[in-house]
Image (tube, rainbow, N blue to C red; front, top):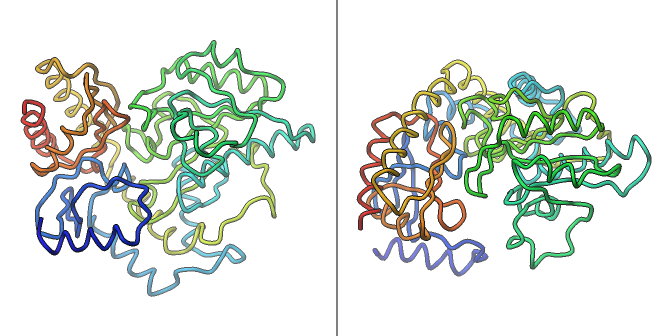
Length: 396
C-alpha cells in the first residue's frame, strides 16, 4: 500500500464515523463503466455505486447540464417554484404512470414519505391513528426509523427499538401470509417488486396481481419500493411495469440522480393525502438535482436505455447460468435485466475481494450472494470481461 493511499485511509479513519467496513482503496475518478483509484489502477464497475450510476461516468450531456445549472441556480427552497423541478416532475410522473410527486434527497426519505402518505390517507377516512402497515420478510427499505420499521431484517433493527408501531411482516410471494395479517386497521402494503439487499428475489406476477386486487377491495394503499429495482434496472422503466401492476404510491431514488442526491415518492391522485404542513424537505427538489433528473429521464427515453438493458441483461443471465453449471459452489442464480444475483454455498466476501484485486468491483447481497448491478450502459464485452475474472476468482 502506497503512502499516499495509506495516508488518505488513515486520515479518513480519524474523522469518519466507522459505520462502513470499507475496502482498502481510494477511488479517484471514473470514465464510462470503469473506475480508477488514487494510484491509477483501473476497475470494471459492476455495482454502479449500488445501482446509482446507471449511465456510467461522464455520460454525454449529463455533466454539462449539471454544470450549467450550478452557474444558474442551485437552491431556492420549496417556498418558490423552479423550472427544473417542474420539468423533472412532469417527466417522472409520465414515466411512472403516476399523478403527483414529492422530491426527496434519498430513497430512505422517499420511503418515509410513502409511509406518511398511507397513514394520512387512512386517517382522512376514519380520523383514527391506530393504522397498520404490512411489509415483507427479508426486505430492505432504509435505515431511518420509519424505513427501518418496515425493513424485514431483525439484524438491522435490534439496537434501535422501539421502532414505529403497527408494522406486520408477511412472507414475500406468499399471498396467504398477507391475507392472514390484514385487518380493518391495515392502511398500506409495502414491498420491493424485486428484493435487492435481501438477495435479489423477483416478485411473482400472480403475487403482485393478487395484492393489487386485495388493496382495491379493501381500500388499502399498495406501495412499491423501486429505489433499487427502478429506473430501467430490470428492462422496464420501473420493475412493476414488467408485471402490469400499478401501485398507489411508489418510492424511487438511486439512478434518478445518477450520483446526485435525489429521490422521490409518487402517488396516484386518490392517494395524494398529504397537504401543506404535513411534509417537507429543505433541499428536496432543488434546481440542481432536478436539472440532473430531468436530463437523465430524457437520456433514458432518447437513447433507448431500457431496450439496451433487455439485450445485455439477457446475455448476462445466459453467461451466469453457464458459470453456475460449471461450479458446484454456486447454488442458485436469479434476477432480471441488470439486477441479478449468484448465490454460493459459502460466504462470498473472499471472492469479491479477489475480484477487486483483479480489477472488477462487485458487491454482495447478504452473506452468500454476489449482486450484479452494473451501469446500464455496459456492453456484452464487459460481461465477458467480468465473467472471465470472476471464474478465475471462484477457482482460487
